[in-house]
Image (tube, rainbow, N blue to C red; front, side):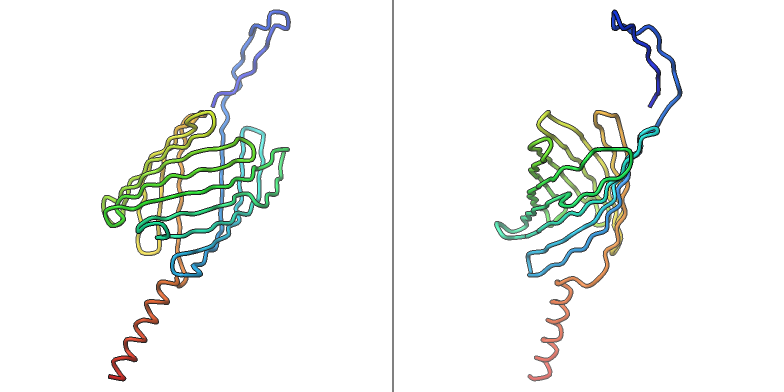
Length: 219
């Protein structure tokens, strides 16, 4: 972005002089650590802590927040998933700012087709600062390890952001990239994840194998 100094005539309120001072950047970063657990076959809960920072020219601010969520699948229909999330339940601010992060309540739905190759999602969110918002996203896995994505984010004022991107995955690792268009222009986002630990499904599968082996020994 270009930085300028503007001199205004106090009588006419017209610009009388504009001086270029160079350029400045707008950098936003977020880091998240989360934990989730599947407590029954089709329901899970989770909690995450995240650090969010924003720097624009000489201004900087950062936040530490806590989020929590609930997830369920196949309750209303096969291949249907829904979730509820509370974001910024606890938020601590630091830096040159008096800003505060809003409490956000979000309810989402997703439906899969073609054995999970196509995923459609829509959610409704309630922001304590700006009211209701709606989001829509679509994902298509071209092959088992690579997929394409598009998304639209809207709020009470209209469409706020549109995104397009792709993701790749290998075993327990995944890498995602997207490009977003919004009122400040264009931005790129990258994320990487690593899944580890035994899931409830894996434990159930191993238990079933043990029971089958025991059955063969008895008969």
